[in-house]
Length: 150
Image (tube, rainbow, N blue to C red; front, side, top):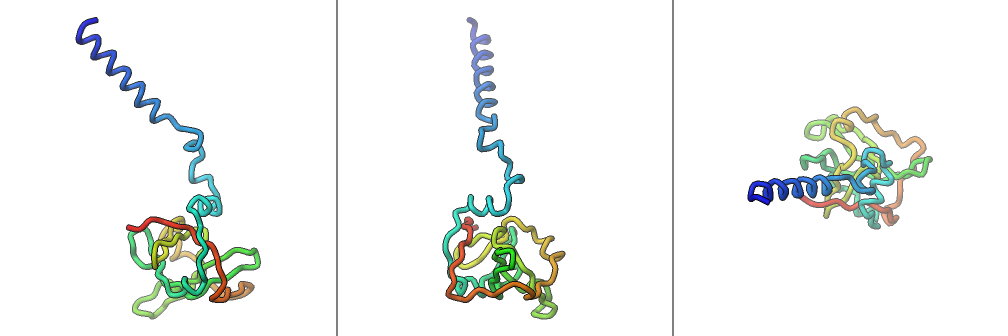
C-alpha cells in the first residue's frame, strides 16, 4: 500500500469513528422536549429545603437578571407547589404576584434560577390570586431541583 493509500484508509477510519461517536445512544434518543416538567425536575436531583429559607430569595432568568423575589410558597388544590414572586414594575411600583411552578426552577446557593420558563412567559403569566391555594408554613420542607452556578 502506498503512502497516499494508507493516509486515505486512515482518514476513512477516523471518519467512521467520529460518525459512530456522534450516533445517538438510547438515553440521547429521549429528547428533553418530550419530558414532563416533573421528570426534568427529578433529573436535577431535588433536595429538601425549608420553605422559610426560600422566602425572599431572588428568582433569576438565564441571563442572571432578577425576575422577582419569592413572597410565599403555596400548594394548589391539584397538589402542586408554586412559588409566588413579585414580578414586573419599576422601583416597586406596579409589581404583581405571579405563581411559578416548583418544577421549572432550580436552586443555586442563595438564589433560584428559572430553568424551564423563559422570561417572556412571566410577562404573560396571569396575576396570582390566593383562591384555592394554601400557603405552606415556613417550617415545612419541600424539594427543589439543583442547578449549577454561573
